[in-house]
Image 1 (tube, one colour):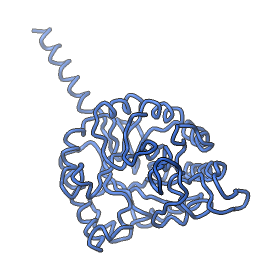
Image 2 (image 1 turned 180 degrees about the vertical axis):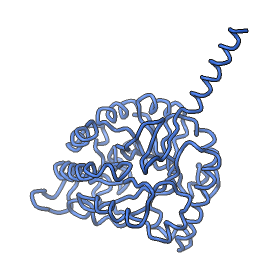
Image 3 (image 1 turned 90 degrees about the horizontal axis):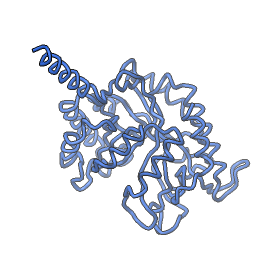
Image 4 (image 1 turned 90 degrees about the vertical axis):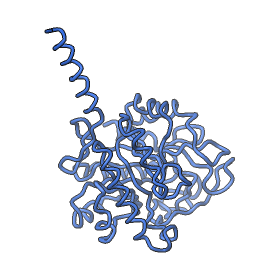
Length: 330
């Protein structure tokens, strides 16, 4: 009988451990993972190979080793990773995932079709999951919502409510372009924490004080950073491919943000690898590309969309890699 009681006690202990795995909470406006404060030192990750227009994870092993070297603890993806083996590798690397759900992704775990719920039910207990994130700066695209962005905020808020009904262990966020206005914040009442994609030259930190004046919810920078191509000369940074400009900008951005680490939950640098599919022929790296509200990109006010990686398409480290490695490992 005594052995049976001990056995039952062990079973209950194991069950308790299972329940507690990957419990992500907000405490004192900070992320807390399994009892420890968690500061996002992240990278946007959309690995599209040369010559292709869709992502695949054929380089995941090499990519994760580079991320570990750089001190990255979080990757942010723009659509869910529906591959248990890939999620397991990310988890084994000690990295967590901000999983973003799009509004209309032709049914691929999207909000319009309600299939995002299927993904959450499938992966909500996976240890790699950090946050559920809804949309990516959709406020810049009312044309996707019958020219009424309120339609997005309503869908976003309803989706957040449904997620929280089925998953009590992960906060729900959204990635908003710049600081959301009063209507957005009010219509997004079910959002637990806000991400903002912010490009304000090489110091985005004034946004933190602006946020504190309008909200007491946690904040993280869901996108920030700089590209490695200068459209024009600026001070010592010359026109053309310029890794020095990117490294200097990211150095200043991260340094300024880290001085105010106590006031936000982290930052995500855009992005891990150059995206050759964005502005022209996916077989080569093209100059050009455009993104809404991006004139604040350092140091030329021009987002050359195919030059944002901290590594190039062949996974060669750019100069900014060492900058990120220095800050993220301290």
